[in-house]
Length: 460
Image 1 (cartoon, rainbow, N blue to C red):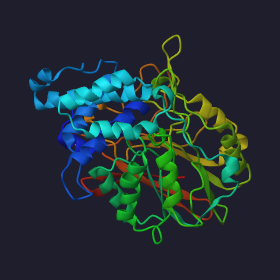
Image 2 (image 1 turned 90 degrees about the horizontal axis):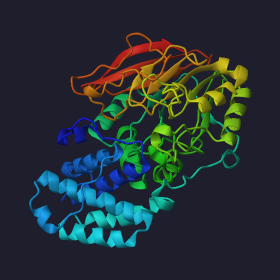
Image 3 (image 1 turned 90 degrees about the vertical axis):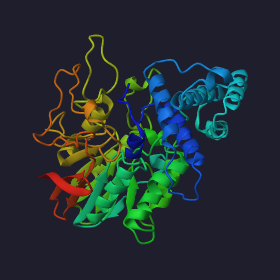
Image 4 (image 1 turned 180 degrees about the vertical axis):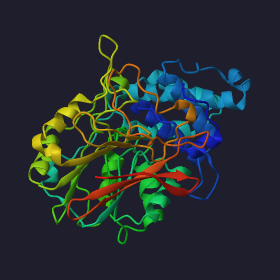
């Protein structure tokens, strides 16, 4: 179970799960909590008690514990406010499961219990509305996907001397996310790229409120602001990608409209290109989320390879998921209980670039809510995890604890770990500068109480 959280922790950001069912349940809970706040302000935060109740119920389900059993009105009357909130949240989770499984008898019974227990009626109406985001049997809905044939072979322009802001796992809508985006804006980037994940499940409402509205606040309206791009993360696909695809179509004005979940930005001087791929589409396993080994569609791999082969300059690769990790397991353990620190499917794709790998200056990814600046590993000169954009990580969680089941893990560049304030690890971002002659640099910043402090820089 994760550390115990309170109302202040909710203000810091969400507790997230790599699970489409639980993530959509959290989206439902947040909407119910938001509607329960009696205010005319669109900026009013959701009721934290309800969010916390849903978190505890989801966390119990995540580790295999049984939900709070349903009970009659008399039992509800004897509960404390916290227990009462958890009971309602647990009934709602059971109701959601009954709804998506088509268990009409159980659904009717649970509706009656919610009503008898005087739980927020918004649970029932919101569950009904969100049921469209589920696939058959409550599984993840088949996500949308724009194919390379539909997207075409075109590339987007990248100006010389471009300064690029990179943020990862940023879409929480919480105060720290807002503050971090302000720090990025103060760096005056020429464009911004988000490495994916709008929480909890990338619904259209979450994409509008937690991403587009925040971009308007920090950078202004579309007609005047810098280009903004966002990759496909696993959370973005938990509702089927409907919010994500609507978002990317609307973010930028021509000629910088993002055509798909993968794209290429290329400088006219042929010094640099940025090549983004979609690893969020296949972050799913019917056997459990811990067994998921994501990959890139075969025709998309071919599209990426063509962009590598036709370009003599240097390339920055971007993805949501990691090529390798020292701290987060990728896929199942083998018969001996050992784990592979490398995603073998992404490595096979990377190796398929052949001689083009020598022109890859760095690969940036997110997914882990951490900053990891790795030494060369698996044939990659610079693997960089920058998923520390906004999701809170308690000090007790220690994101730098190595995986015991990995025998030869990648190692970090010395003195590049995130600092913390005694309670949470700090959030941060990266700034890239790509010159016309193919030279470049990367600088890494932490948010220290509202001040962007550079903690590391490197030549690319």
